[in-house]
Image (cartoon, rainbow, N blue to C red; front, side, top):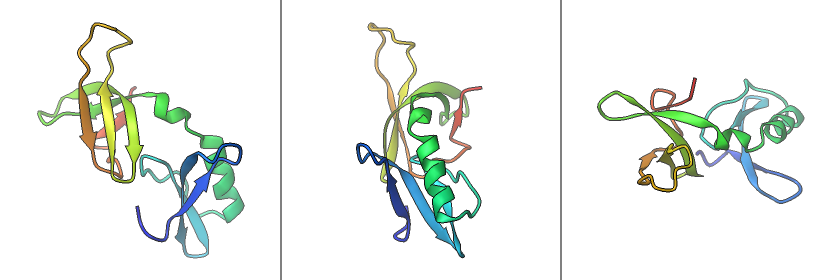
Amino acid sequence: MQADWIEHRRSDDGELLGWMKPVGEGFVVVDLLGRTRTDAVDWLTAEECLDALGLTYLADRYEFRLNDGSWLKVRIAEVSPTGIRLQKDDWGSVSATELYYSTPFPVSPDTLRPLS
């Protein structure tokens, strides 16, 4: 996260949805994983994009690249500008051992990708 990024929060509960990064005369939308979501757009379009994006993508399943190069199915457990914590997707099993992994913010598409 850079010092000039502008937080955008949901109007009804104040939940952080992402940032607007100033670029030239416009703003680039950045989500909570640090991924760029738009080219440079005006302020209102950036706000509308973040409002529409919401937080639902955080509940999606992802694949995380392990050190050996293999991909592991994970869910996002925590996000912050200091790092992203992932949990091995155990498909809701109450008897599975919980395994957690960390990756830096912003996330790299070479490290974390949506499950296809």
